Length: 193
Image (cartoon, rainbow, N blue to C red; front, side, top):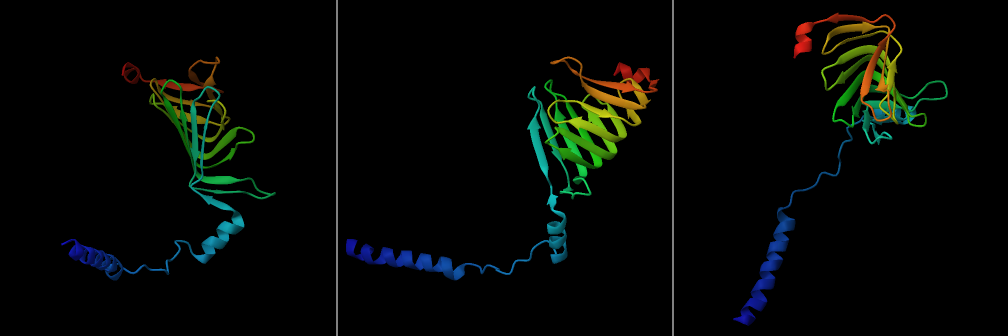
């Protein structure tokens, strides 16, 4: 019986191994690249990066994340820019501030990020503010909008000539400060919620 299995088992193993190779599908070696040659040439010439993602933490340990759809390096005559610029600031108290804009740029060497065009600032407490330009820091939760801002919040609708946000004290909460002709339309039913 042992002699029989010495011959049969290796033959069965060889048959099983050969069926793996005989029944396997052929692999297509001519795979097309999802970019045309023109796209590749443009990306190489402009130094385009797709889906760049910056992650960091502030000195207090708060999370800073900035993403874009695509970014260009820029040249001596132009600055580096990114399209569909989005940011997320995770506050130490558990809140989140999200930032969305048409374009922007990030300067890690200067610890700044700039959001440009149709900037929407949203916080977890229900405040939503729109502006055209927002400058933010990367090493702390701080920013300023030097131009006109419009928004809605817990108290009602607000508009102002400028805005800043950040902490007033070292470990204090984040405050939004509106400046230059602040106009608030108070809605009591919103405040009661």
